[in-house]
Length: 206
Image (cartoon, rainbow, N blue to C red; front, side, top):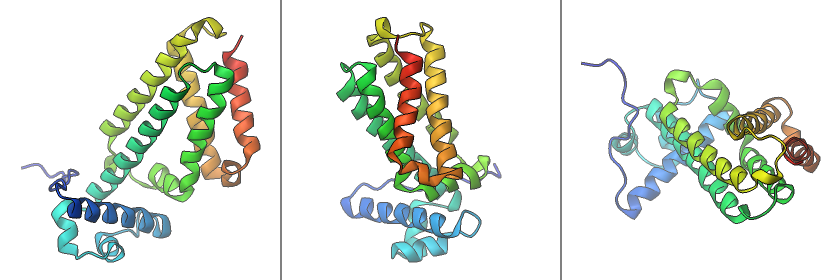
């Protein structure tokens, strides 16, 4: 028998009431993580915050690890869906217009709850992270960016699309992540958004 704890939900919510319960549990998880940090977060506190019994919580999530994985998956999916909507809307807009809007969207995501982003990125052990979901999200975003860059390839300075995707992804994520952790005031400063946009446009556009 495997000694590894399950990270999968015990059951998936089928009815509206069940979905509301699961959403309340995940919101409570985010709140407790933000308030107390990873080490002091436990299922009893989460159940109390969510207004459900510990037995009800365990109907859906077998342990703290499964809650963290579900929360990260929800967070990643929200990012992917928002960026997909942005890319679809901006697909026929040139980089000078699209890049600032995309940067603005990414920064807005990080600004929603900087402390939660910090906990999910810095405090949670790698063994309790859903690498599969993170990889899926990264692939979704990469495909969206690849399609956009190919659409505007004749306007771009760099011609190696795969390398360009890598540089853009790493640059934006690193800058936003570092701002959240080291300079959270930057996330809400429009000048930060402008500087990141200018950096990318000067790199991309001929």
